[in-house]
Length: 301
Figure 1 (cartoon, rainbow, N blue to C red):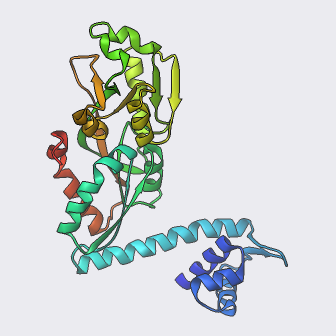
Figure 2 (figure 1 turned 180 degrees about the vertical axis):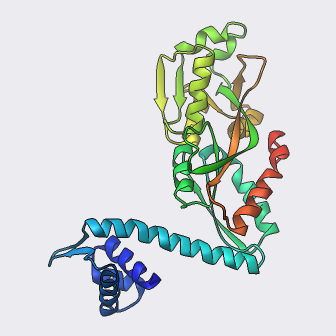
Figure 3 (figure 1 turned 90 degrees about the vertical axis):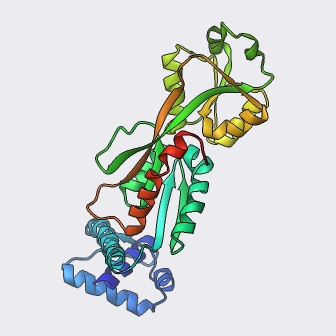
């Protein structure tokens, strides 16, 4: 049955029997036989065929959706049974939002690889919204994000570590001359921000609201690195994680703007799909992350 479902899914996605056969490394007649057997088993046609195209009909769309879920469950079952018989090994698909993924995760994955050399990690970096979406659909085994989660229905969430957020400008930016009255000047400055959907944009908007900052000019970029370089070049101010700018603060290419005696903080979160079963690789990586929280809170990497 799994070969029939795989053939059907591949034909539906390729919209061509020849391409599907090439992708699965089997003959075109074998593909056709798998599709025919599946249609006979279900007692309904799943594909509309013409000389120019192949596409799913209504029954085919229903079958395609559930066939994908069945094969994913079959794959998960194989992983879990393998885990029961063996030490942690195999693939681990990690997702992370930009701040954690680009500035913290590489150090941790390097340490994790030394502890578990049989686990092969792949990393996907995207904004918080996208990571949540991929974890909830099972495309990622585990995610690390910052920012609030509005919808918890499809993911398990666990607070992981604290993240300190700072307002920075170029070291020679004129804003630094206003020591006691700097808060009054911030609305008149250009602010360089991340896009909506990112955890960094969320905390930036929180800072604006909390301190009644109404920027006269907002410049939006989808890259944290571009924001950092733009601010260092004197193009404006920004709100970023201290992880992102710690070296620039040490090198004095950026300087922090203090507007409160209390640090601005948020949390990093670990998310996994809501499920009774996770691979051993996922579980040991989650445990590894939780054991690093104290180091992260003290910026010790």
